[in-house]
Amino acid sequence: AQTVTQSQPEMSVQEAETVTLSCTYDTSESDYYLFWYKQPPSRQMILVIRQEAYKQQNATENRFSVNFQKAAKSFSLKISDSQLGDAAMYFCAYRRWSGYSTLTFGKGTMLLVSP
Amino acid sequence: DADVTQTPRNRITKTGKRIMLECSQTKGHDRMYWYRQDPGLGLQLIYYSFDVKDINKGEISDGYSVSRQAQAKFSLSLESAIPNQTALYFCATSPGHSYNEQFFGPGTRLTVL
Image (tube, rainbow over all chains, first blue to last red; front, side, top):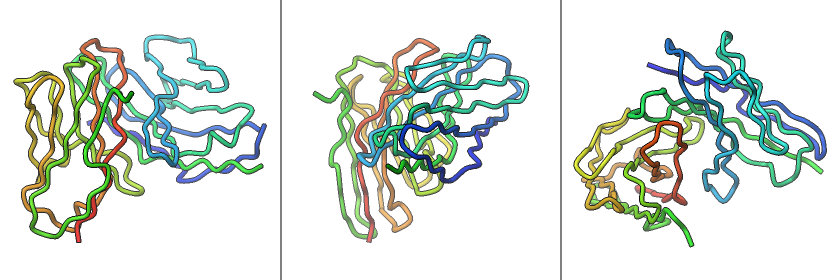
């Protein structure tokens, strides 16, 4: 079974600075998808970014980018120019390549942003 | 205009009561999911359905049951609620292609006294 590990229960960053959230996963498969979801205090789950394992290029979405290291099974999220609105719980998630598969989530990292 | 809605948003009930949480979606997706979120544990999959006639157990299905009444509706029942089922419950949907993400409802906060 696949497992997803987020080793940082909580991280802090100041506005305008950069922070990196870590995620590692365990799988025996070569093709899969990885996701970062954000859960602000409103508790709504929001997709931040997605990475297909077959793509070597790291995904980026505005201030959010990932560092995908397939051999190391590592998928970290970098948030640049942090904003107060980035404060949230962040979840890393894994999904098998097969169309009939589900998401496996990590336990989350709480990101605190200070002025 | 929410695409995935959950009712109720908050519920307090007593041990032993039967509870139903409902999920509706207007996204036209075939696949629907129920998750439970506990502090420090992330989201755990309870049940999922890839189409109207398909129901599958997730990793923590004991004490729960589901019904897929239509493509747009997927309800979760707790037949006899217990205090350790106090949690935040999410419904999610996804389309049929393989690369897609899941779209989440706003969540239901359930407290069992």
